[in-house]
Image 1 (cartoon, helix red, strand yellow):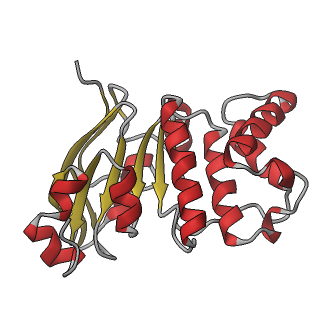
Image 2 (image 1 turned 135 degrees about the vertical axis):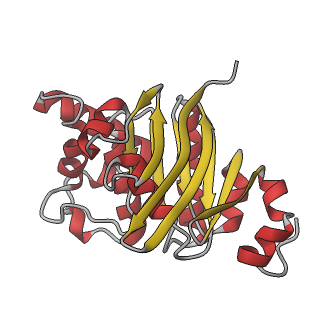
Length: 242
Protein backbone atom coordinates (compact mmCIF):
# COMPACT_ATOMS: atom_id res chain seq x y z
CA UNK A 1 0.00 0.00 0.00
CA UNK A 2 1.34 3.46 -0.96
CA UNK A 3 2.05 5.64 2.08
CA UNK A 4 1.62 9.37 1.54
CA UNK A 5 3.74 11.37 3.97
CA UNK A 6 2.40 14.73 2.76
CA UNK A 7 -0.96 15.59 1.24
CA UNK A 8 -1.70 19.10 -0.05
CA UNK A 9 -5.44 19.52 -0.51
CA UNK A 10 -6.83 22.55 -2.41
CA UNK A 11 -4.34 24.96 -0.82
CA UNK A 12 -4.64 28.65 -1.72
CA UNK A 13 -2.76 31.67 -0.38
CA UNK A 14 -3.95 35.24 -0.92
CA UNK A 15 -2.10 38.43 -0.04
CA UNK A 16 -4.92 40.97 -0.14
CA UNK A 17 -6.18 40.83 -3.70
CA UNK A 18 -3.10 38.99 -4.97
CA UNK A 19 -3.56 35.23 -5.36
CA UNK A 20 -0.08 33.70 -4.92
CA UNK A 21 -1.23 30.06 -4.77
CA UNK A 22 -4.58 28.88 -6.10
CA UNK A 23 -6.26 25.55 -5.30
CA UNK A 24 -3.13 23.37 -5.45
CA UNK A 25 -3.36 19.67 -4.59
CA UNK A 26 -0.81 16.84 -4.68
CA UNK A 27 0.54 14.03 -2.52
CA UNK A 28 4.11 12.99 -1.77
CA UNK A 29 4.94 9.37 -1.00
CA UNK A 30 7.36 8.27 1.67
CA UNK A 31 11.00 8.19 0.49
CA UNK A 32 10.09 9.98 -2.73
CA UNK A 33 12.13 12.80 -4.28
CA UNK A 34 9.45 15.17 -5.49
CA UNK A 35 10.16 18.16 -7.73
CA UNK A 36 8.32 21.48 -7.62
CA UNK A 37 9.11 23.64 -10.64
CA UNK A 38 7.80 26.65 -12.51
CA UNK A 39 8.73 30.15 -13.65
CA UNK A 40 9.76 32.88 -11.22
CA UNK A 41 6.67 34.09 -9.37
CA UNK A 42 4.82 30.82 -9.90
CA UNK A 43 4.14 30.42 -6.15
CA UNK A 44 6.68 27.71 -5.30
CA UNK A 45 8.28 29.33 -2.26
CA UNK A 46 4.92 30.67 -1.06
CA UNK A 47 3.61 27.11 -1.12
CA UNK A 48 6.68 25.95 0.86
CA UNK A 49 5.92 28.69 3.39
CA UNK A 50 2.32 27.49 3.72
CA UNK A 51 3.43 23.87 4.14
CA UNK A 52 6.00 24.68 6.85
CA UNK A 53 3.92 27.15 8.87
CA UNK A 54 5.57 30.43 7.92
CA UNK A 55 2.37 31.60 6.20
CA UNK A 56 -1.10 30.30 7.10
CA UNK A 57 -2.91 29.01 4.03
CA UNK A 58 -5.95 31.10 3.12
CA UNK A 59 -7.85 27.89 2.38
CA UNK A 60 -7.21 24.17 1.98
CA UNK A 61 -5.43 21.61 4.13
CA UNK A 62 -1.83 20.51 4.68
CA UNK A 63 -1.69 16.95 6.03
CA UNK A 64 1.72 15.69 7.19
CA UNK A 65 2.20 12.19 8.58
CA UNK A 66 -1.60 11.90 8.96
CA UNK A 67 -1.82 15.15 10.97
CA UNK A 68 -3.41 18.41 9.83
CA UNK A 69 -0.70 21.03 10.35
CA UNK A 70 -2.35 24.19 8.92
CA UNK A 71 -2.40 26.05 12.23
CA UNK A 72 1.02 25.01 13.55
CA UNK A 73 3.99 27.33 13.98
CA UNK A 74 7.21 26.55 12.07
CA UNK A 75 8.92 25.23 15.22
CA UNK A 76 5.99 22.87 15.83
CA UNK A 77 6.12 21.65 12.24
CA UNK A 78 9.86 21.06 12.63
CA UNK A 79 9.32 18.98 15.78
CA UNK A 80 6.90 16.78 13.82
CA UNK A 81 9.74 15.98 11.41
CA UNK A 82 9.63 18.52 8.57
CA UNK A 83 12.55 20.87 7.87
CA UNK A 84 13.28 23.31 5.06
CA UNK A 85 16.16 25.25 3.53
CA UNK A 86 15.92 28.77 2.14
CA UNK A 87 16.66 30.17 -1.30
CA UNK A 88 19.08 32.67 0.21
CA UNK A 89 21.37 30.93 2.65
CA UNK A 90 21.62 32.80 5.94
CA UNK A 91 24.12 31.10 8.23
CA UNK A 92 24.69 32.59 11.67
CA UNK A 93 27.84 34.28 10.45
CA UNK A 94 29.42 34.95 13.84
CA UNK A 95 29.18 31.28 14.83
CA UNK A 96 31.36 28.43 13.64
CA UNK A 97 30.19 25.85 11.14
CA UNK A 98 29.76 23.32 13.95
CA UNK A 99 27.77 25.75 16.10
CA UNK A 100 25.44 26.54 13.18
CA UNK A 101 24.55 22.87 12.78
CA UNK A 102 24.17 22.46 16.55
CA UNK A 103 21.40 25.07 16.37
CA UNK A 104 19.43 22.63 14.24
CA UNK A 105 20.23 19.74 16.58
CA UNK A 106 18.81 21.61 19.57
CA UNK A 107 15.35 21.07 18.08
CA UNK A 108 15.68 17.38 18.97
CA UNK A 109 17.86 17.47 22.11
CA UNK A 110 18.61 19.79 25.02
CA UNK A 111 22.01 18.17 25.59
CA UNK A 112 24.97 20.18 24.28
CA UNK A 113 27.06 17.03 24.02
CA UNK A 114 24.38 15.22 22.03
CA UNK A 115 23.78 18.28 19.81
CA UNK A 116 27.49 18.40 19.01
CA UNK A 117 27.52 14.68 18.17
CA UNK A 118 24.51 15.10 15.86
CA UNK A 119 26.14 18.13 14.21
CA UNK A 120 29.42 16.30 13.64
CA UNK A 121 27.50 13.40 12.10
CA UNK A 122 25.63 15.64 9.64
CA UNK A 123 28.72 17.65 8.74
CA UNK A 124 30.29 14.35 7.74
CA UNK A 125 27.24 13.54 5.58
CA UNK A 126 27.63 16.78 3.59
CA UNK A 127 31.43 16.73 3.47
CA UNK A 128 32.16 19.63 5.84
CA UNK A 129 34.00 17.78 8.60
CA UNK A 130 37.18 19.74 7.87
CA UNK A 131 35.41 23.08 8.39
CA UNK A 132 33.93 22.70 11.89
CA UNK A 133 35.90 25.56 13.45
CA UNK A 134 35.60 27.94 10.48
CA UNK A 135 33.39 30.99 10.74
CA UNK A 136 30.15 30.17 8.87
CA UNK A 137 30.04 33.64 7.35
CA UNK A 138 33.43 33.14 5.70
CA UNK A 139 32.38 30.15 3.59
CA UNK A 140 31.89 30.43 -0.18
CA UNK A 141 28.35 29.88 -1.52
CA UNK A 142 28.89 26.20 -2.39
CA UNK A 143 29.90 25.36 1.19
CA UNK A 144 27.18 27.57 2.66
CA UNK A 145 24.63 25.47 0.74
CA UNK A 146 26.12 22.32 2.28
CA UNK A 147 26.01 23.96 5.71
CA UNK A 148 22.33 24.83 5.22
CA UNK A 149 21.67 21.20 4.34
CA UNK A 150 23.59 19.92 7.38
CA UNK A 151 21.66 22.26 9.67
CA UNK A 152 18.27 20.96 8.54
CA UNK A 153 19.50 17.35 8.65
CA UNK A 154 20.44 17.93 12.29
CA UNK A 155 16.72 18.30 13.08
CA UNK A 156 16.38 14.60 12.14
CA UNK A 157 13.60 15.25 9.60
CA UNK A 158 11.31 12.72 7.98
CA UNK A 159 10.82 15.24 5.17
CA UNK A 160 13.11 17.92 3.77
CA UNK A 161 11.89 20.83 1.66
CA UNK A 162 14.83 22.16 -0.35
CA UNK A 163 14.33 25.61 -1.88
CA UNK A 164 16.80 26.02 -4.76
CA UNK A 165 19.55 24.20 -2.87
CA UNK A 166 21.54 24.12 -6.14
CA UNK A 167 20.97 27.80 -6.97
CA UNK A 168 24.21 29.64 -7.72
CA UNK A 169 26.31 26.49 -7.88
CA UNK A 170 28.49 25.26 -10.73
CA UNK A 171 27.96 21.84 -12.34
CA UNK A 172 30.42 20.04 -10.07
CA UNK A 173 28.92 21.56 -6.91
CA UNK A 174 25.41 20.74 -8.14
CA UNK A 175 26.34 17.10 -8.80
CA UNK A 176 27.80 16.85 -5.29
CA UNK A 177 24.59 18.22 -3.73
CA UNK A 178 22.47 15.80 -5.80
CA UNK A 179 24.60 12.88 -4.60
CA UNK A 180 24.08 14.00 -1.00
CA UNK A 181 20.31 14.22 -1.58
CA UNK A 182 20.28 10.69 -3.02
CA UNK A 183 22.17 9.41 0.04
CA UNK A 184 19.68 11.15 2.36
CA UNK A 185 16.79 9.44 0.57
CA UNK A 186 18.50 6.06 0.92
CA UNK A 187 18.49 6.60 4.68
CA UNK A 188 14.71 6.98 4.60
CA UNK A 189 13.99 10.69 4.19
CA UNK A 190 11.40 12.15 1.83
CA UNK A 191 12.40 15.23 -0.17
CA UNK A 192 10.58 18.03 -2.00
CA UNK A 193 12.86 19.94 -4.27
CA UNK A 194 12.32 23.42 -5.78
CA UNK A 195 14.83 23.93 -8.56
CA UNK A 196 15.25 25.79 -11.87
CA UNK A 197 18.00 23.52 -13.19
CA UNK A 198 15.93 21.10 -15.29
CA UNK A 199 18.84 18.69 -15.73
CA UNK A 200 19.10 18.41 -11.96
CA UNK A 201 15.34 18.03 -11.52
CA UNK A 202 14.91 15.35 -14.18
CA UNK A 203 17.96 13.40 -13.00
CA UNK A 204 16.85 13.08 -9.39
CA UNK A 205 13.05 13.41 -9.09
CA UNK A 206 10.54 10.56 -9.12
CA UNK A 207 7.57 12.88 -9.62
CA UNK A 208 7.25 16.56 -10.55
CA UNK A 209 4.54 19.19 -10.11
CA UNK A 210 4.66 22.32 -12.27
CA UNK A 211 3.19 25.57 -10.96
CA UNK A 212 2.36 28.52 -13.19
CA UNK A 213 0.82 31.78 -11.93
CA UNK A 214 0.01 30.08 -8.62
CA UNK A 215 -1.89 27.19 -10.19
CA UNK A 216 -0.92 23.58 -10.79
CA UNK A 217 -0.21 23.27 -14.49
CA UNK A 218 0.89 19.62 -14.63
CA UNK A 219 2.05 16.63 -12.62
CA UNK A 220 3.94 13.55 -13.75
CA UNK A 221 7.23 11.75 -14.12
CA UNK A 222 10.26 13.68 -15.45
CA UNK A 223 9.67 12.20 -18.93
CA UNK A 224 5.98 13.17 -18.88
CA UNK A 225 6.75 16.71 -17.72
CA UNK A 226 9.52 17.41 -20.23
CA UNK A 227 7.24 16.22 -23.06
CA UNK A 228 4.10 18.02 -21.87
CA UNK A 229 3.15 20.70 -24.46
CA UNK A 230 1.58 22.97 -21.81
CA UNK A 231 4.73 22.85 -19.68
CA UNK A 232 6.95 23.50 -22.69
CA UNK A 233 4.84 26.50 -23.70
CA UNK A 234 4.62 28.01 -20.21
CA UNK A 235 8.01 27.20 -18.75
CA UNK A 236 10.53 25.11 -20.61
CA UNK A 237 10.46 26.83 -23.99
CA UNK A 238 11.95 25.25 -27.14
CA UNK A 239 14.69 22.67 -27.09
CA UNK A 240 13.45 20.79 -24.04
CA UNK A 241 11.74 17.84 -25.66
CA UNK A 242 13.09 14.67 -24.03
